[in-house]
Image 1: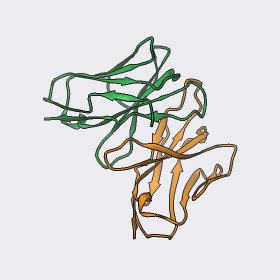
Image 2 (image 1 turned 60 degrees about the horizontal axis):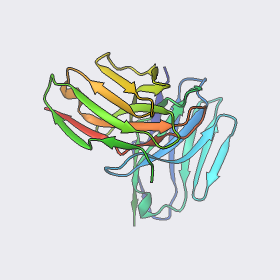
Image 3 (image 1 turned 60 degrees about the vertical axis):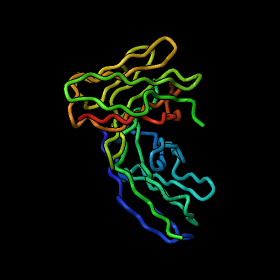
Length: 114
Length: 113
């Protein structure tokens, strides 16, 4: 089955700096890679996703890159703000007509210091 | 705000007991997936239901079972509870199809004592 590794497990950045989180996956059949943000005591919320036919996607201060050959993908947050503090999870999903079955990484706790 | 709702929000059970958790999917969604999130870890896929049948299962024993109803809501049942079953249980609904976004409920926090 799929295995997703995520690094680092914790990340502390100064407000305004950039944050980068990296994930690797094992199953070359995976073709959908979402990123979720989970604040303390709340549900995971999708912040950005990328499909296997795309190498990079950007949404305001957030960008994701995908290298299918190397089987890794990364989340980049620029101009970090205190409200970016949360746990971020990457995930990978194999094709499935009924919907995605997500394999999650272990999470990265991001702390943005004012 | 997502339309996926779960009940109850918190639950305390004794080892060996059985528990049923419920999930109402977002309007228009016909697929429900269940995940277990232990403290400090990422969610782990338990199983998925589509058209009222199990459609894929993660590495969980048979004492984890589920149902999906005609209105696409779903239940997760866990028998013979163990201490390690203590976790946040999340359901996610989506519309069947590849690469469709999964919307998570707020979760049920299960504590087994």
